[in-house]
Length: 301
Image (tube, rainbow, N blue to C red; front, side, top):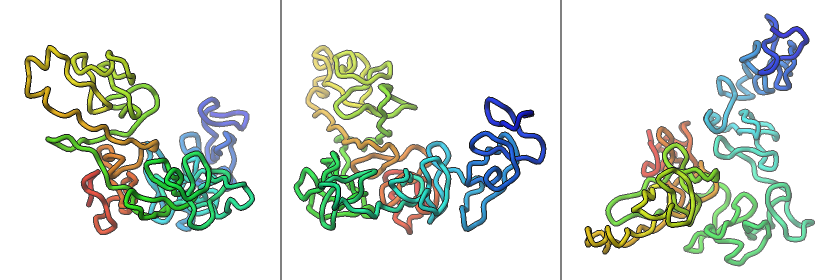
């Protein structure tokens, strides 16, 4: 039990009747005890939020925790709520785990720049992956990295979308079965429990991403479920001539955000649903078929 008023992992619990704030101090006021203010229930008491603040039992959200209830936003610190701190994209709102509000300011005084911390493009302009406003294909095409949070974006058929429009519906397949795509990771590891390698890289039998023959040769254990692989070695082609005639499976286009789903992104991890907007989650907003749940990329109710 804390003796100097501090609490948390390095200090321990508050004494009976006190709450441990997110900053690691013991107290009894709302800033210490309210869950949506960061109260640490492992080290003292905490009070539930009013329904107007959040509907989650513990108010938490994010990777490994879950999504907020419908109509609530997940802040960059992993708390559900409806304030600007929770909901504004420029404040770090996590759209994978709740609703978010797009930046309202425009780029008029930013010399054509756009993106997080800068603002949105003017009406009918697109924000490129490099943070510039324009109307060319480099700015507007989804597969060129167009940022729909800060302007319009175009599908391959030329139709535009905003932040709440339907996601892309393309996915590569083999000639025999659909490929279930795991989330892309950037740690260098790959395979079950880690996810896919970035585009253009292979996953070795030891679970590492790379481009050399040690990573990409099927004869050396390349894992095609988690990255690209070269064709079979000549010896194996002689043993199985039918296999040598098979076309190499087209690589699935991967996107940066591992919580995206749908054609062009892949399936959600086990137990998660793919919403009509192309995000993985577990609430009714993601899982209800009436709300557009995509059963080919996750479970649905």
